[in-house]
Length: 200
Picture 1 (spheres, rainbow, N blue to C red):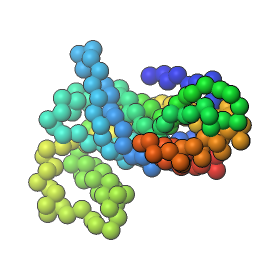
Picture 2 (cartoon, one colour):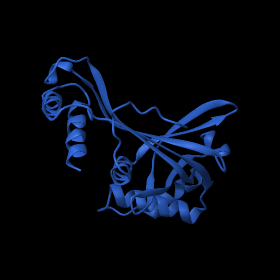
Picture 3 (cartoon, rainbow, N blue to C red):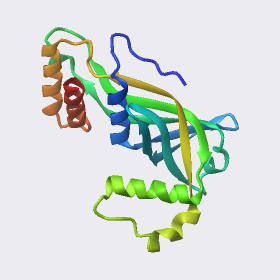
C-alpha cells in the first residue's frame, strides 16, 4: 500500500513515528478476503529495535473470519492519531480552510502465535495499560480458547503527518490557540499533537 503525502509536508523521522505508533497502540488490521477488503479494529503491541518498528503483535477472536485466513498473508495496520478542521482565520495571512491530521500505515506478513506467545502478548498489553494490576490468569485463562494471536512482520512503515508544516511560526501559534479555544471534538488533542510535533 502506498499513501499519498501532501506536498510541502515534511514527514517526521523514524523515532517520532515509532513513538507515535507505540503510544497510540490501536488501529485497524486490513486484508483482502475473496477480493473484498476486511478490517478489524485491534489494540496492538509494538516490537522495536532502536527507532525502527520490526513487528506488531495483536489478537483476534476466533469468531472473526480474518482469524481463519490471515496466517501467511500480507496485511496493513492503519493508525489514526488526532485530526481536526483548521479555520483559515487562525493564520496570519489570507488562506483557505484545511484539515490537519496524524496517520501511519504499517504493512507486513502475519504469522500465528502459539499459546505461550499469546500469553506473553496479553501480559505485555496489561503491563502497558494496567501496570499496577497484573493479569489474573486464574480467571483470564478461560478466554484463551476464544482468541488467537498474530505477529505482523513489518516490511513497510508509511507516515502521513499533515500538521501545518508549510505555515509560518505566527500562523502555527494561531492554529494552536484556535484549537485550544475550540469546543469541537478532537481539537484539543490536535493542539497537543502540534505542540509535541514542533517540540521534537
